Structure formats: structure tokens, C-alpha cells
Length: 155
Image (cartoon, rainbow, N blue to C red):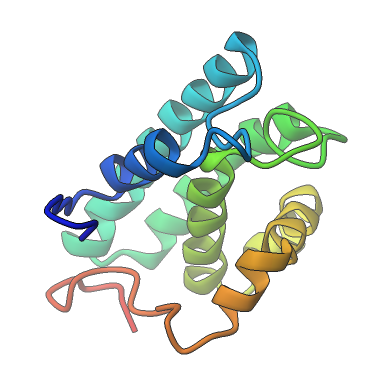
């Protein structure tokens, strides 16, 4: 809720925040190419997330989710040596990718971050952003559950 505006879909919420409050922090991106890269990675990770979510709710097959997590290798390669997805500053998509890393690391019981040290270091950089770090450590941040209570893979 933001005044009279009620939004319930996570990517719509992220984009709303960027559109309303993120311009000064460049959360949407500083350039057209940065905005395009953020949108591109959102699309890639959304596809990966959808595939994993199907098993979280449907089959409950942890091994299938682990296998799907390997698709994040493409994101790790794109990230390379950059601090954040588009470069030296965070955008909204960094928080989306952060959340997916959290899920995969949970499902794989820590194996995901061991397998992808680039994404593990990136995850730590996002978690260490001063305002996010304070929020992440607060009671307001909901680390779990990742899925609705009807999901077969949850906590």
C-alpha cells in the first residue's frame, strides 16, 4: 500500500517503487542501456524462477529445482566482475536476483552459493547495501517463507 495505491504482484511493486521513488538513486538505471540490461536480466531470472516455482508448488522435486538453479550460470557470467547487474551501482533488478539467490541457496542447503561464488559475493554486496542491510536485519524483512503455504517446497 502506498496511499490509495494497492499493488500485489512483486515485479509490479518493484517497478512502482522505481517509478515513484527511485529516480534520484538511479534504481531504474542511469542510461537506456542500463535499463535494458536490468530488464533483460529480469526476463532471464523470471523464466528461471517460473521453472523452479512450478516444482515448488507442483512436483515438490527438490532435485529438479537444484537442476534449474544451474541456469543461473548465465547470470553469473553476465555479472562477471561487475559489482551489480548493470555495473557499479544497484538497480531494482539486483533485489529481484538477490531474492532468487536466497531461494536457490535455501533449496540446495547452501550448495548454490558454493557452486557459484560470483553470485555468492554479489549476494553479499547487495545484502551489505547500507539501507538494505538495516532492513534485511530488521523484523520487517520476511526471509521466509518463499512460497505460499500450499507449496510443497517451503519452510
